[in-house]
Length: 229
Image (cartoon, rainbow, N blue to C red; front, side):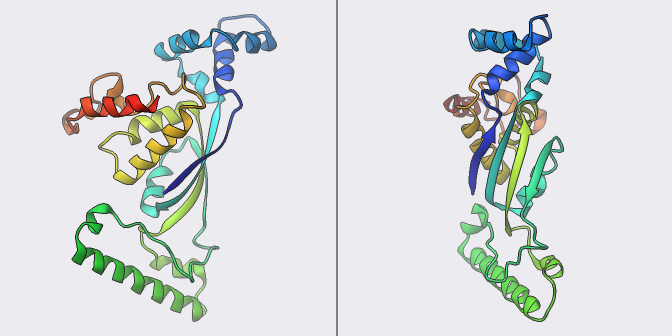
């Protein structure tokens, strides 16, 4: 898995601070931007603590992600307040070789892993045979498994990212999207440390939102995420 922060709103914290100040001031935009360059940490912390999160929607962050499975990307695109551009299995042929993700639970069992890899090889060979027989890639792709890797560019605004991290950094999230979310958070925190200082699973700032489904490891989770700042 590879995750990169491709681009983001320049000085996102200044933009968010200016947007928040505008709600309570009759100053000009230029004045608000200038004022937002100084003393913004205390102001932003107060704004976020009050739940005034709509101002986070004025900044966006774009990530390039590759090497995740189609199973993972199907979960990712369920976050509807985002923009996605994904590698097409219709137009991109995988005749040479499609790569696939092997879950650690399968890799840990040699006999099952061997059968898993053999099945992937059989799928690859049959896929190539279909292309050679004139079957278009858009139809041959019906054979490709959820394990097949994909590439995707994702753009989210600051508010949606905090929501995404709250759900997907949780230890109850599926392992692959959980790992992806943590890598995204590690990349974004240095860019906007105030905005994402408390970003992560819901148990960082309160009781576990999973209720009876809790992982029961809240202390360990909080210790893990102190290293992100």
